[in-house]
Length: 224
Ligand code: CA
Image 1 (tube, rainbow, N blue to C red):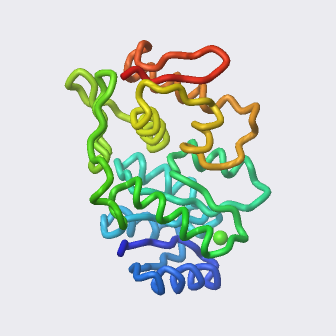
Image 2 (cartoon, protein in one colour):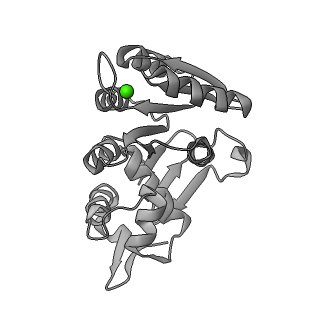
Image 3 (cartoon, rainbow, N blue to C red):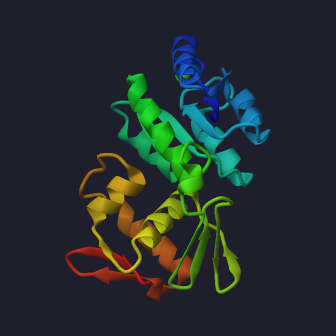
């Protein structure tokens, strides 16, 4: 059981998602505009947010930006228009954990919700998930979403955290750009996209350049 907030102004979609989640045993709450959604998330009463982009009051991008700015690490799945690649990219760069193009089947959304809850350690199987990862002088606490290196805190965005987590679960092994895109971004990014390289650069800056090695023609390796 998880407490899931649906921020969606289209009543038909909101109630379709809420009904489905309740039938799966979750607690579902609906917020029909941006400001209400933001207040609800910041109340701390929810485990995951399904967030629409086009909302009255303040839009989904602003809700996301404000909640991340206020330190909330809650998993967020953004609902995007199927043909809007730029919305998707903006949402992910803004700290969303995943996205779901509309229209979608409930089963598809449910699969993503389960995955994000599991990664966040709040859903089913949460207890069996490792809670702390350590490699290359970096320590990631998966429950509190805290990262430290050499005893000092490192501030990571949600995306950076997931990338670090993926690397550290595979420390010492080479991961290709495609594997990283698939695991961390979980979508059909343009294969020419350099988003992985950009984010590896961010992590190197935060953890030290030696933490992640480039393996020419293959990908990257997080040093164990
Ligand atoms: Ca909408």
